[in-house]
Image 1 (cartoon, rainbow, N blue to C red):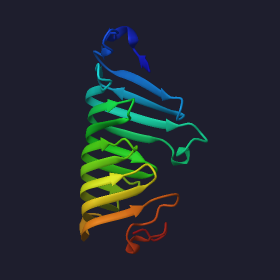
Image 2 (image 1 turned 120 degrees about the vertical axis):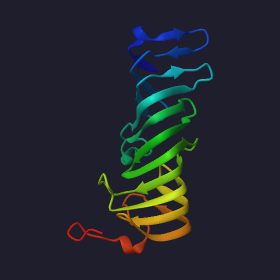
Image 3 (image 1 turned 90 degrees about the vertical axis):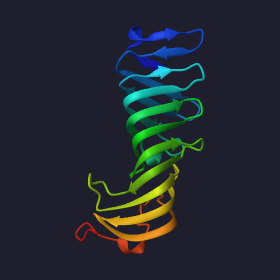
Length: 194
């Protein structure tokens, strides 16, 4: 673990506690998996149980080294207003969060990072559209996203711009390698977008 601004840090090495009085950048490296996680936060507190708690804005970026499992998916970026992260188990929760993973964008009132490197979002919205106001999106009471690109959602509504088009109780779709539309009617071309 590398923490920028270490001299400004309140640190108690006997119980593994630290607290930053202001903005902080924490870099966590996993040599076994060839990953680096970089947390930039308004402030952060490391707790004796190993959790890192952030109150205020944060940005968490996970980068995989080339040639490692999942490196072709690129980096994963999560932002929000509150975070609790256990870097050892790579689990935690985020409030008011947005996660961008492998070209997929998930927003949620609450996002939970699961041990299998997945994300479970409540009050969620999901899209692969890159626009700030997406042309299409799926909203769900609960949405699960794995780092392999599988999405499972409950209480689902498919939206085209601001119009609800389809409501279903459950949906599952894989967005591996080539992203395809979860519903056949969403096929568009660059010249003829949906």
